Figure 1 (cartoon, rainbow, N blue to C red):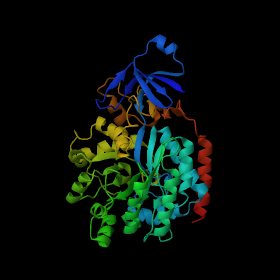
Figure 2: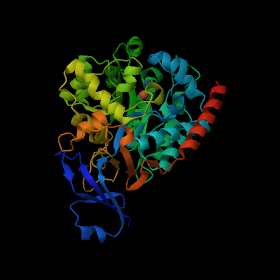
Figure 3: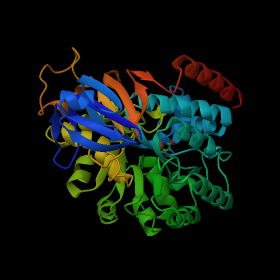
Figure 4: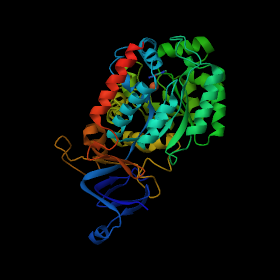
Length: 446
Ligand code: GUN
Ligand code: FE
């Protein structure tokens, strides 16, 4: 039995009451939170396991990002200042198409490293067309919690070399789901990932959705209604708006995660609500690709679930939950008023709401007895921070001021992956060197 006692300054529980606990400890047994409460000095000195005394730090749940492309990390800074369809056609499809196993591995490792050092412990990854097993291999080795899946494409009018055929897409996806769903102690799960309406036939979209019934706890993850030209193309092809089209194929449910949801009509708002669809909001990506500003205020009023994601490195150009939280709050305010998207709401989107969107609301996303110990220690007492520390401003500190520099240590299911600001998984210089080497080779293959 592996036992650990965490002694932080304060605990941001994100439980139903949004309790913040001072001078309490969290006991972890075999990766599960088994006790939260006061411990006397005697209790602590007699504790039979690792004691982590960090009475200057704040314990929070690990962040959850519900839309990521690990395969794109290598392409950061190589596709700036373009809008979606040009960005895909001129840069991202040719780049992803040029991946081999080694370049994909280097990209995924850079992404995992960045996410973990930034306090993100769970992701939903969109995968790529080929060598998906490499992405799983690295995710498994990292110990991170994730949903991932092969990015499915059987149509590609923008870059025809980068696609497969319907039959192989379905067969390969099924085999991957069989191999990788619910493994690594359940930390790795399958997220079916048809890329978007323009890259998938109706048959592929429908058959993929049917496949989910064989894999309990899996998800359906796709892009939708991101860009005006994209939805115009969908309209031309199917005589319907994007979400309306997905709904007509029977794809939408509480197991669906749609990235973006920016250009959405009234009817589609009601569809999303009725089908309990989850929106993954990616504010940096939406701004940088000039896609638009999603009506998050409306989603929240309607009770539609909204979680956060950084999307891929080349449309962001970070994989940083702090940037997403800050922007998610700030960009709504000029439109809907300064009182919307308060810091607590945004912090919950980045933790418990993300967890629930993934169907993991009972396992992660808050610090409660019985949940997995996916935990982050943050330093909120630096000179750049508000000088007041109390219950009323802790979310403000995290959402409006803190950044990745304030992350001290990160664990997934009781296992330290970042400690004292250092990755326990990766040598940073080697990671960068390998990335550079693989990127150079990849560019020479284009
Ligand atoms: N739509 C289809 N593919 C992509 C992608 O890779 N990134 C974003 N942001 N949107 C997409
Ligand atoms: Fe995306």
